[in-house]
Image 1 (cartoon, rainbow, N blue to C red):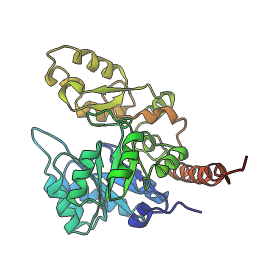
Image 2 (image 1 turned 180 degrees about the vertical axis):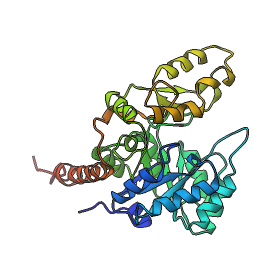
Image 3 (image 1 turned 180 degrees about the horizontal axis):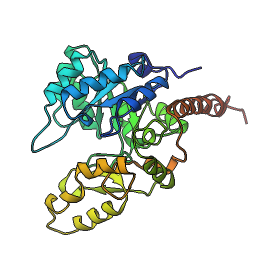
Length: 330
């Protein structure tokens, strides 16, 4: 048996599980392994240094899987922004069928993708932003709770509330993101009206994930308290792994007149990228979600996806199904 939802039907995948975009992690190795496991693998566009490098990565991924995969394109504030339009055109030119978008002012690009017949999943951290994305014409909302890695927004609302409210407020399908990494989470997300789940941190800790083994082992040893929130004074909150750098950033951020320049050298993307290649978890900042608390192994993507789907099915069929009984007469 399989779990059939609007997400699986819309994307042509076996299991209602999406691998979210992850900087420096969403490569062809990662995306193809997830897609081959029956979920939706996703390449991260901005991990590639140029639009043409993204084109090459898309074609490389096609040599590694014949299953559907998508591309993530995230729009973030930058002094010198990437050539987003060129990245978007490569995605369209290469015939990608699914795009995950996130970040600020995506309207122009959502329109481009929709005109090209692409299914658009958009990440949101609040109901108000989800309603705006719905008006822009996205197909699926990826509702990202406070537990998530990366940017959880500034409202500090957990997935439990966001998903329950999404069921009341949204008229398009949504999937659950932030804190999901096992079958119980998938079953819970479905019970809350979601059509599936999005996972990032959990997929980082797999055999095929293109990060150093030391980092994977550090994730297994960690628990739900092993993350830190940084950039709060700048209204650009990010959840990262709590390492020596994170502790130092938080210490500097406690100064009443703190400026981003005070932490800039600690949080550079170049240092974070080196974490994944050198295996030193304290070299720079790297994102991780509170789902660390339920990660205790490093399986293949195929084993992980199958286990999550099978466990969710078992919970639905053998636990939830058995607690509904006829009303007894007293």
